Length: 500
Image 1 (cartoon, rainbow, N blue to C red):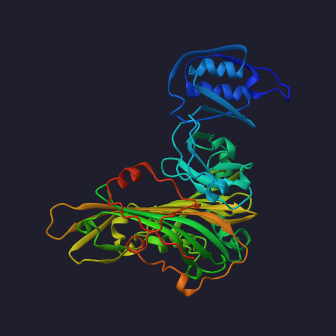
Image 2 (spheres, one colour):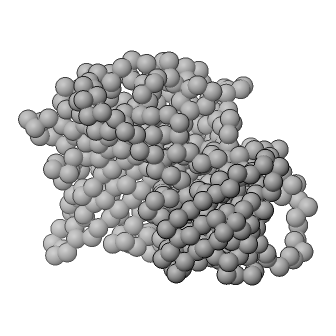
Image 3 (cartoon, rainbow, N blue to C red):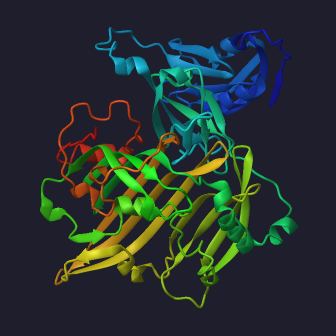
């Protein structure tokens, strides 16, 4: 197997570059990766257009143009190519039709782009990757299937979006290349070699304490508005009972203050629910909107971050991971062996340079999770026994203009529920998810009392009025595959509200 590449002049078209390559027994995906490496470009395509898993006996070229090599490799005359910067979009030309109502002010002001994020080495999808426009506080995340969509004001169409995730090199992609489809984006794992002696000498607990001490330096010490998307769902025996979505405008108080000073204003919402209410869980859980707000662990510190309670835990250095061009300590924590109440175990990610806590993954210790019901159940019928099976969370912060802000939280909770005198139990699971879509720091004022939403309510039980202009220009997290399937089976009761 051999590869070579010629030296090109700067004004030579990317598709006209000449490439020499000789590789055998590879998939189209592997061939495109190798061609991209030697020709200095990135390929973007939809898996429906390019059968990337198809096996090739050989890919051979000697001083051949890139465009001809691509046509020989892909063997599909319907495919076309578009070059923007160092990116080559591979696509099928779609039949153009006359659009209806495309002259509306909304379509003129916004562009919808989308993609699906993969690990370049394993081809596994990457959930919860951050997708944002460079240098402004507008973005979203990929869903559990790696899919994202982002509605972008047209004034930013000439900008790039940046896809990032802990442990990976960030990928910057021109916005205009992603218009009109869900294209595959592959991000490269970034491995950081580090001497073992350096790892052993890390004071893990000291780093965590230092991160908390630098809270006022790394996080915003003034109030701000955070436009956020929230969703929650409940399943019984793997079948959805309800699913709710909302867009909030949150008055986010300074990180000097507690989460109790935050306010939530509902902008839009909708819910889908099972028509037979007998299937619903007769238990009230500590989740919902308040649960999402409390997962801003810099403002609402759990015991594993509170210096007063840290002696109940053991902290160990696990690794150093990449986040774009930065690096972070990955510090594991778990309760001490002599502590037997249900506490958390997990990993904290702390920036090596500025000691900002940028993310965390944690769960109730599996050894003691079955004894944690009173931590989550606020009300239940006395005839019902509730036993937690798994309680896990993830939290991520995003940096803008030198300060960090809460960006994404996710909670997944599962319980076994059995009614008295019943032989079999039922498995209930719920998830809650919150992502900060846009940060505003100008003209920030607290909401009036009549405008705020009580955060401790069970959101899916709210009563809203129908809004035919639902969502409009607002960004959301793309629904996951299993949610899309569930929606067709759940009674389509769609409701929404908009606060003026």
